Amino acid sequence: MNLKSGKIERFEEFSQFTNLKEFNHHMEMWMAAKKHDFTKGELVGLKRLVRFSAKIPGVCNAKIGTVLKAIHDEYNDNGISRSTFKRMIQKAIALGMMTVYETERKNGSQTSNLYVFTRFPANEPPKEDNLDHPKTSNPSKTKNQKINKRTEEPSDLDYTYVSDRVPQPFVQLVKYFFSEAKTIEEYWKMTQIAAYRNNYEKETGKVLDIAIAAFKQLIRKLKKNQKVRNPIAYFYGVLDQKFEELFVKELVEMED
Image (tube, rainbow, N blue to C red; front, side):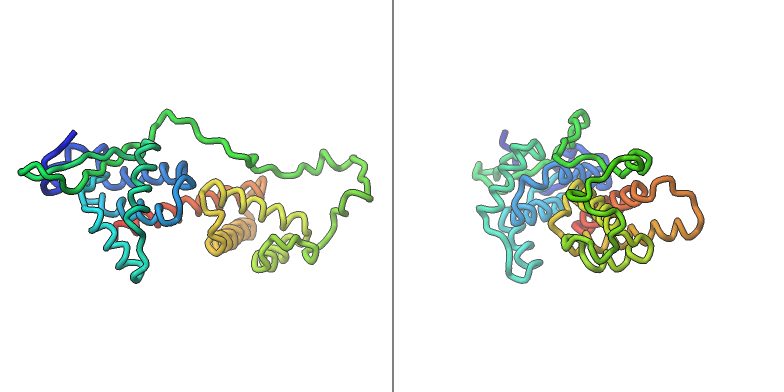
């Protein structure tokens, strides 16, 4: 299907979204489900294309050169290649994230493509991953169990025995309220699960900042004597919300 080139406004009928907020919401779901299918460079190109699709939500007819120049300028002369951008487009098409139409000038020569983002399928079941849902220990089940001291650690090891995998800033905060190594490690495990589910597991700095903020929110609630039936489950809920807010914020920043 070849279309005559023109200003972006003439392609408004191709938009599948009622407004920019709805477009961003669907892009949030696409990214949460398919982010790992793209390389870092491809994600840079995809996010920039999303920003170029803000005027008519989900529709863009910018030339590849224009998009690449914008990336090049934003990253201080460290952009991505044309081949990387094209690989990103092919992946997005294969995943069903967008449809691409060729446009042509009045004389029939080809010009820029029209990129049309599609809605996230409402009937697609959530992807299952290898991580289990958050689980917390049940003292009533273990109270009467015999412990094999040769194979199991004592349950009262303090924070100095916390695994090296747990960042020290997190340990130093949590130890003032929950001093057992096992409990601290359980809170960090919830952090890792939430980070993985929200595609932030590789961004260690952001993960640590959110974990600390979420734990402080839990403590504030406890200090106000507000009832928290399961502190670790509450902590996980706050984590999940904060990761979602961060993702939405990053999408909104693409519009600036």
